[in-house]
Length: 256
Figure: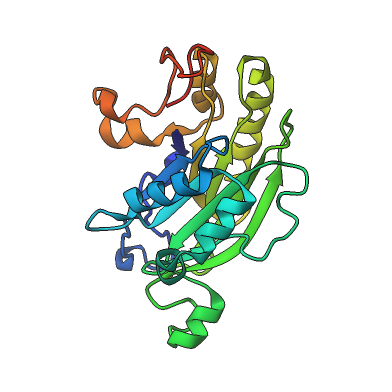
């Protein structure tokens, strides 16, 4: 799995030109997991993964999932922990799986995020009180051999309602013969962080980084490796690229 973010927002710090001294820095945690649609027991596997993610003393604020099948999505949406704790994308989208066997799914903790409806219920005010307000949710169609897209969620900081940050959940094209697609996909994704009103954001998920050329796509598109920026290159336990890592399916170097 891989994360990359706009260098202008090394941490989630809302930006306001009117009163920079009054900004409240909010640190948000994110976990991304390809849950394996081809598992023989996909639903049971997804439940175990969710339990593992949520078992710690503090649940992540943002969860990106890839390879979510229709049955797995239904199971996750029925899970009491998900219903109580998270806002979830695409909960009513019945067309999501029409031409693909699986898709991406994003969960946002209700502790730090709110929708307009939730704000009315909680009397948090139009900006959601101290929470990030959910803005536009969209899927960016990508040039792809496998009909991949990017799931984008815009979040509006409480202290700067005129600005939004973008969370981009991706599952880029697989295998060595699709490097040219991944290169195009990365360029498109980087450009989405430069749209008017966007103060930056993060791209994370399954980058299918299976070659040294993939590693260069971050610098080429003027992005920054989130893990390296926060922890440096010395911590191998946190490596998010899988170049030179043997895959279980015997296809050679693959992503972790």
